[in-house]
Image 1 (cartoon, helix red, strand yellow):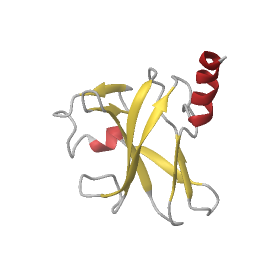
Image 2 (cartoon, rainbow, N blue to C red):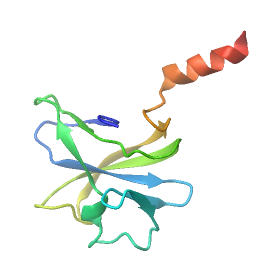
Image 3 (tube, one colour):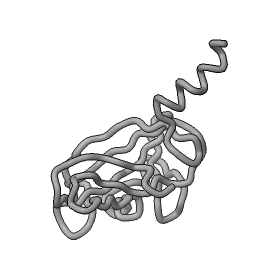
Image 4 (spheres, helix red, strand yellow):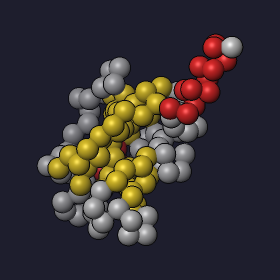
Length: 120
C-alpha cells in the first residue's frame, strides 16, 4: 500500500521503518515478503527488512509503503540511517502502532463509522 507509513521529522533525514508483529515479535522481511522469527533478524538481515521512507518535497513528512499483509495491529519502528546502509546501530527515531485493514490504515474515523452501526 503506497504511503501506508507516515511520520514527521526534521527535513533532510534518511529514515527507514521496520514492521513488527506484536503478537510474536516477528519482523517483516521486505525482500522475502514474509514475517521471520526474531532470532533470524540480525545485522546481516536488517537490509532485507527495512522499508525506506521518502521525504515529501522538503516538508519534514516522510512516507513509505506498508507491506501487503493480513488485517491486524502492527508496530512500526522508525530509524535514522547513520551510514550508507541500514544497521543495528542506527538510532531509533520513533515508532507507533498501526491498525491495518489489509489494504490501508484503520484510523479513528474508520472506527467511529464502524461503531455507529451498533449505536442505532
